[in-house]
Length: 264
Image 1: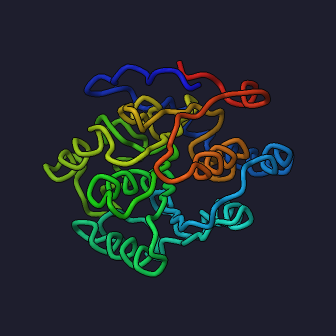
Image 2: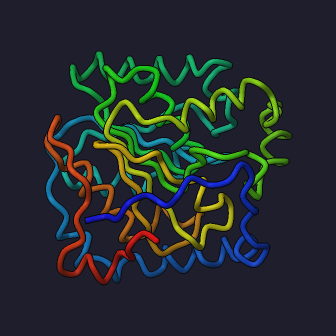
C-alpha cells in the first residue's frame, strides 16, 4: 500500500535542476522508445467498465499529445474523450473562469449520463483537480500526472513561458486563489502521480493533500514522458478500474513492488 504523503512543501521549493530540465526531451524519447517493453505489464491491467474518461493535455500541448493514453484506455474498454480545446494555453483555452472546460465536462456528462473520470497531464492535471473541486457531482475521479497542485508557480521551470503564452501573471491574486483551492483536500477520489526526476515541476508540488480518498504515487520518469511511460499507463488503468464509490488506495504487490518505488 502506498505510504503516507510527503510532508507539505515550504512556501517556495527550489526549481528542478537544470540538468533535469535540459534532459527532459531525451528522457521522454527514451520512455516512448521503450514503451513496447512494458507490454506484459500493460496487458495485465484490468479491463474497464466503459465509463467516460476525458484526458487533458499539458501546457502548450494539444489533444494529439494524449493519443497514447486515450488509445490504451480505448483498448481496455473505456469511453475516452479528447478535451477538444486546442493547445493548452491556460485561460486562453479554457476561458477566464474555466467556463469552456466546464461546458465540455457538462457535455460529456449529459451525453453519457455518467460521471466523468479526468486524467490530466501537467497543467491539464491542475485543471482536472480544479474541476473536481468545483463540479464534484459530475466527476468520478481525478488522476494527475506531474501536475502543480500546491506551492508557488515560480517554482516551475516554465513559469516565465507560461506568463508569455497565456497573458496571465502567476503572481496574480487569481492564480494564488486557484492554487489555494487545489491545495485543500480533494472532494473526489484523486491520485497524484509524481517523479522525483521531474525537470519541469518540483515533485513536492505535484503531491495532493492526502485524505481517505486521495493518494500520491511515485514513478520513475521524466515530466514530458509521463504520458508515454508504461508503468504510468498501467497506474492510470488500475485506478480507473475501481467501481464507482469503492475507491481504495493503490497496493504494490508482486511485480508492482519492483516497477513502482515507494513514496519517500
